[in-house]
Length: 468
Image (cartoon, one colour):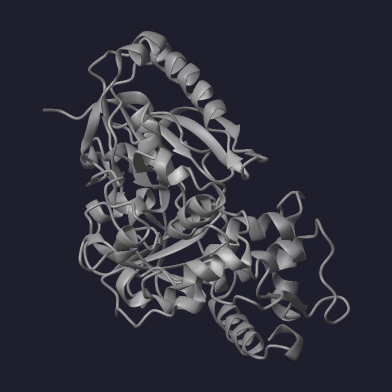
């Protein structure tokens, strides 16, 4: 059976929600619509606008089908989110924003419950980044919620559930630092029983399995064929990884960039991971463990760039390198490999003064900082072989050049504008159209970049006492 031609991909990122229509024969997006993923205030807690997203998605599905035709639907979302359904199939509670702070007393109580890192591959993360911590917090804040909850499903599967009525979890989302899964054993962790939710967790399925076909009301509302298949869905970073699992041989790594920069090493040296440096074990679409590390690179880019245009010149590059103008970790100190350290500037005009907002010097130094943070993550995961960069940073030549110089290994650019949508669409088939990534174009002398990288690492290790 030939794969579908047009796959509608529901793609819910932390910053934006979108619907993309992917042509699987050309492996490109032919239509995209987006809306901001605004967080709504409580009560009972800050939460995602799921109903607003749903109305947006229904309208976009109808429009895409009318203009192009939709043959299948796939879903990809950010991790660290889970959905609780009541006995009627409605939300038992709003979907918690994972960045919401959990009171210290409740968090401390959770710490006594959670399984060790060696079992789950999940480090203890801030706020609700561990799904188990979310559940514990929600049950503590709303004592009736545990009783009201009939099914607990993954965030990608929530949208699939709205389309098909079928409940599930996918292996990539349940394996995304939830504390609920043991990647090496391919099973739920002891926390599921300790939280009293063993009978509530929906079955765990592979990302590419067909979840079901459209409910009659959805087919009528959108004009799609009732037998349109909807696949189970996938965590967004694993969606970026999936095309390369299909196409690559030998050790390699993928850097998925967006709000988060996620590094995933395939076939590397497998070092012991350090949970205090935001390393973790993800689970890929095939159900296999993947050594990973991450930091909020997209958020850091927005903070430092501050909305100004990104347009460095060759002279900016030369002056950043000659004057050792550096941004040192960490812009977002709550996550990443240098947690607890506060950002600082080195070099500049005069020494130690940050380059002004909107200058090319600031943009270049920021790009180099992001590349060197990424190199740190690659080192922590034992990555070897080429590095494939997905997402917005794949279009930043200064980031790519520094990453190549710092790692001493080939850096490749994905040919797809957005790896998440393409990867999610490929769950429906069509891998024969995959193109090999392209070598990154060098911007700057390798020796000069390597010297800058060595100096950055030296200064990075000299943490001021106030940062400790």
